[in-house]
Length: 499
Image 1 (cartoon, rainbow, N blue to C red):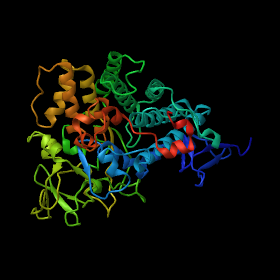
Image 2: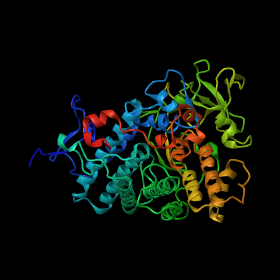
Image 3: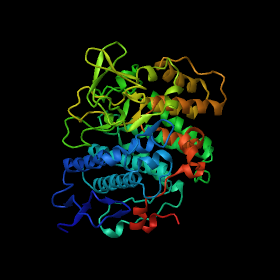
Image 4: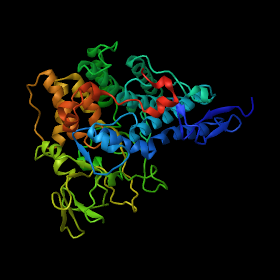
């Protein structure tokens, strides 16, 4: 039927609900959309674009870093960040509400691609690529949702009418994780190894399958709420995590560990060997999300003017001033070995002028050692090309080590990470539990400021053992396991409530 609505993709719409006070946009009819591969490609890019909303991209750090032992937040920072930092966040927290919303926007857009491309007459190769990336994106969003909120509503079709905006809550974690595993496996099957900045390929699907299985294995083993009752065998889950991590590390040649820590974080080389999945942002963009201000969230103010950082070879790198939102804790800074390059090269305690004279020091002109992972020396005003790192090879290497335990292979990959950081090999006589704890600590040092720490603490039931802010808040480990479903979503979709 002509002019039948093929998809409704709304800025205000989430799969579980839509805010009828806002005006939907993005209506397409069968007369002018999904007629060609280019149309479908545009829709897929629209699905990727959901990652770039600043509430989502900044949420990676507000959620993954503040609720951990790595960062504190500056006094007065809004968006519910104080409550996240102090473990007092509730169902009305602004950041958690927006993050939930944009995950479902991404899911809806992915569902639109899946539904329309699956029924198309496109060339098989083009069809496979479109479907593979769409399934990857849907799995990616659901993985983030389940790790943050636990049980969530399941929507497998695109939203066409308001009546479809109230899907049922998943019955249990098995239902959510089975969907995630299925989506990533479909993505792996459909996709080839094909590096494109900001896009997913077969290796990205394999890497996130490893992360999914490892999350299940370690969470159930650690007795994390809701995981204990999952119909999953811990040993099988660890074996599956190892299987897919092994594929990434051994079965392809496109991605590998970068021998230089500094190269990994060179914003001008987002296609470096280590980047499996990296968000697409560039200083040439016209609005935030197309470009990045992430570095400014980590950098200190000093005098409110740009300054220089000293490189390992003695040269200087230009750096924008910052808003000092995310402030490295002293305990975390002091946890590094003094010879660890991730401390000496990537954490900054002094800044310079163009002549190499110190103009700012930690403890005098700013209060914390700050990361240089998001420095763009070619920034334009407040616009930079610094991007969130969503999956790196080092993450996979450490997942593999954790999954296989203190075997020769486990030690090999753990020690490769340590060697690159300038450290000696790990204790060769660790038992399984101690070895895995060592890997978790290595992940903290290696993946710091990349939005990973909260998830590691949760799946190991270590929040109240590691984060002094959680301890001070007096929360139980079970309370720390998941955030509540945002109240706004429950108000709009009563099925989103677990009660």
